[in-house]
Amino acid sequence: MSPIERPLVLLHLLLVLFLTLKVTSLPTTEVQALIKWKNSLSSPLNSWSLTTMKNLCNWTGIVCNTAGSVAEINLSDLGTNGTLDQLDFTALPGPIPGSLVSSLQKIEYLNLTANFFQGSLPINLSKLVALKDLRLGDNSFEGGIPNEIGLISSLHILELYDNPLGGEIPSSLGQLGMLQRLNLHTAGLNSTIPHELSYCTNLTFINLGLNSLNGSLPPSLSNLTKISELIISNNLLSGEISPYLITSWEQLIRFYLHDNSFTSKIPQEIGRLTKLQYLDLYNNQLSGSIPPQRLGTSKIC
Ligand SMILES: *[C@@H]1O[C@H](CO)[C@@H](O)[C@H](O)[C@H]1NC(C)=O
Ligand SMILES: *[C@@H]1O[C@H](CO)[C@@H](O)[C@H](O)[C@H]1NC(C)=O
Ligand SMILES: *[C@@H]1O[C@H](CO)[C@@H](O)[C@H](O)[C@H]1NC(C)=O
Ligand SMILES: *[C@@H]1O[C@H](CO)[C@@H](O)[C@H](O)[C@H]1NC(C)=O
Ligand SMILES: *[C@@H]1O[C@H](CO)[C@@H](O)[C@H](O)[C@H]1NC(C)=O
Ligand SMILES: *[C@@H]1O[C@H](CO)[C@@H](O)[C@H](O)[C@H]1NC(C)=O
Ligand SMILES: *[C@@H]1O[C@H](CO)[C@@H](O)[C@H](O)[C@H]1NC(C)=O
Ligand SMILES: *[C@@H]1O[C@H](CO)[C@@H](O)[C@H](O)[C@H]1NC(C)=O
Ligand SMILES: *[C@@H]1O[C@H](CO)[C@@H](O)[C@H](O)[C@H]1NC(C)=O
Image 1: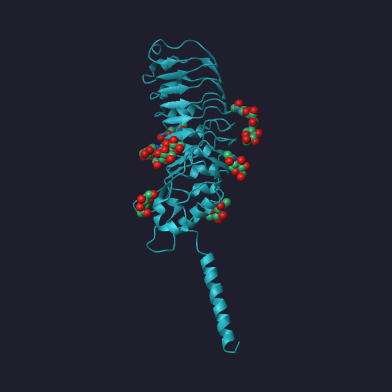
Image 2 (image 1 turned 120 degrees about the vertical axis):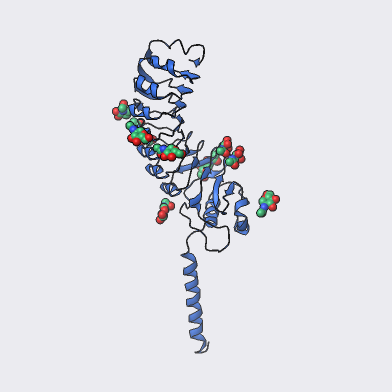
């Protein structure tokens, strides 16, 4: 090598080093984030590849919004086994101008129902601030429900049922004012029902059945005036079914509280629930009778 060539080689090396550093320090793009996650899953998501990144909106289970950002991920019932650990929820818009690469944080809908997902629910899930609909039911998630779930303030639907999550119903759920549907049945939950749920006044559907929830029904739940289906059966709940709650729940169509330890008289106010069609009080320590108005119009157990 001549003395003139040597600095050139050095310069070249520095340039390569600089470019490499520059490339590796770029934020993860949406496409990179999805492919990294896919590579950690056992699922034949063949359409998810760098060579088809221009067709991101046509990938299996992906739906984009009109701006070309990923708005929905629906991998339900695909037999996918894996975790959420390798999904970078903070992926930033891509650096390629004019491409469809954009931010995962615009996802509004995530349905991974009925797969073999395991591991814990990542705290960074809460970075998906646009999420309206989160369905993770029928998987093997464990390790509890993170408090940070209360930060996903646009959530309308939250389904975590049929997972061995364990632990508490976090009181932070009270921050989800838009929530309409909350399905946490069969999730190994062993806390009380947090009174903060009363702030979620848009709730129409709650299923907390088949857990180990204890304590009584918080009186503040009288706030849930839109509730039409309330399923709290098969828990360790006790205390009374207060007439005050029943009179607030005028929209009730389905009310299952069987297999608990409720004590009290059956509130006669049940007779005033004109929409009630399904009522199951079986296997509690309730006394008294079902108001006659209800007999004949409802399916009562
Ligand atoms: C999307 O996929 C379908 C079938 O898988 C194909 O016919 C169509 O051409 C694809 N669209 C684009 C834009 O790649
Ligand atoms: C999600 O995928 C499931 C199973 O493939 C399908 O039944 C369902 O309609 C899909 N939902 C949406 C909103 O695409
Ligand atoms: C979510 O996935 C489940 C299981 O495949 C499916 O039954 C359900 O329709 C999906 N939800 C929506 C809104 O597509
Ligand atoms: C999913 O993967 C884990 C770890 O590789 C394995 O232990 C488990 O048996 C798998 N589950 C299914 C249903 O394939
Ligand atoms: C969570 O997101 C932050 C960026 O907001 C990132 O620094 C951190 O590594 C992420 N944690 C995990 C476990 O992915
Ligand atoms: C509640 O569930 C958590 C997590 O599964 C567990 O560690 C704890 O021991 C349980 N508490 C009771 C009283 O069962
Ligand atoms: C209930 O939903 C409406 C509209 O969807 C919204 O304006 C209102 O703020 C929500 N209630 C709460 C307590 O957040
Ligand atoms: C009932 O809901 C309203 C919002 O609609 C809220 O301001 C109030 O604090 C709630 N009360 C209780 C007891 O949770
Ligand atoms: C719920 O169960 C736990 C564990 O058995 C107990 O420590 C706690 O006092 C119970 N809470 C209520 C309100 O009964």
